[in-house]
Length: 570
Image 1 (cartoon, rainbow, N blue to C red):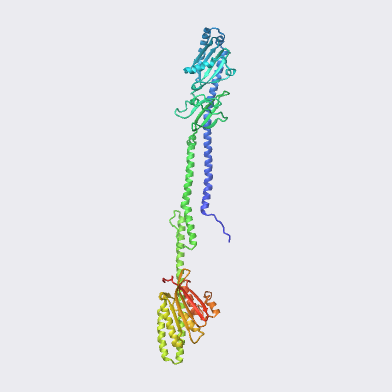
Image 2: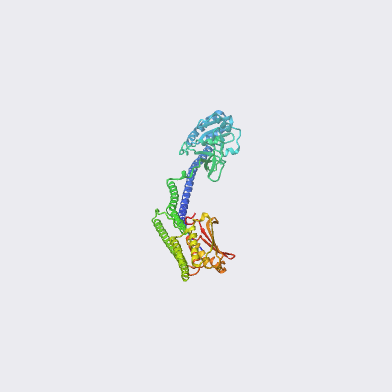
């Protein structure tokens, strides 16, 4: 019959649990991941929006400064007169008027660092600074402004100019011999950094689009942050991971950047999102605990019950299941199963006892079969003596027979010693001499260390009687009984050999005697004695006793192998 593979309860529970938990956890994970990514993107966009606003302010400042310079040089009469003046005194007078106009503008915008007025005629140079710059920086500025010629490109755009600790932007307008310039100091723009804690590791700075910082400590460190189309860049600086967010300032070669440590995921989350993460972790932990709880309370007890049932199915009825279970159904199942095993064990014990009683009854019946068989032979002998009127011999035989019967009735038990059994054989031969005048020649070869070994009663006498009864030689009968210890396949036996010179067994009889297990003579009137011995050997020694028949020439031989490890025999 083809075996059917059935799913066990462990697989079913695991499958059901995983079918519910995995999709749930996966959806929660996707929701949490999406929320976190959206929050991170939102934070970056917020920073970028702030930078864009500040960039727009800086763009307006640069454009406004260009417009103011253009108006002063193209439309202002003071600059026109300053340009066409010949004397140094006139240039000083109109330069003063121009600086008075520029002073309010200098205080109006935070990032304006100064104005510069220069004329090659009379070599006149007039700076106007908002702050006090170091003398080397002022000299650098003067050398740059007063150089003989400026390329055309320097008059049409903002020029980055490096000072000792920063880079400033310079815009120049005017004529070939007269120049009005404005300096934008990007390091003075601190209005957008008011919301950044002083002790934080966040850095705001201006840089060229090529990534060269113009402000902050990054300028002195010669760091370069290459331009990228994406406003967000993740990079490594000073052996730490940072995120760089940038915003371009119009069409100028300038961008506003914020460099801040790359924070972990949790730093981007708000309270609700953190609660969602905690709930997800709790769910994962809870599902693991539920799985462990199911295994401990349900799966493991069921596996234990299944294992116990499997062992019981193999015949081990001594096992019992644990009845201490928290689940009522499992407890009731365990109690019922144990009660069933107790009932089976009790029934098995009762059946075994009944089997023993039946074997004992059959054994007693066999013994009763042996005794009438011998009794009838004795009565036939007495009858023969009476016919011959041998009254003295009758008295002697009755006396010998009474002693023999006393031994038989006294030894109504499973086994007797080998010495007692040999004595019963001697008594039987004496009776044969008295009844029939037959005096067999008995040779006994009994090892001294086996005389007290227990043997089934009449087990030797049966074959001695059979030799005399079926003798073919009516003159001289020779019997030999030999008993020695033997070892066969590590098993110790008492080996008893009974042989005679009475012609041996016919071949068909040998075939039957050596296969007594295939025949049943229990309730028949022939071969009763021999089958009795065979059957009693099986019953007494649990099938370990052996009986063999064979011929040696004209000698018939019977061998008994009685186990010495049974019934306490040593």
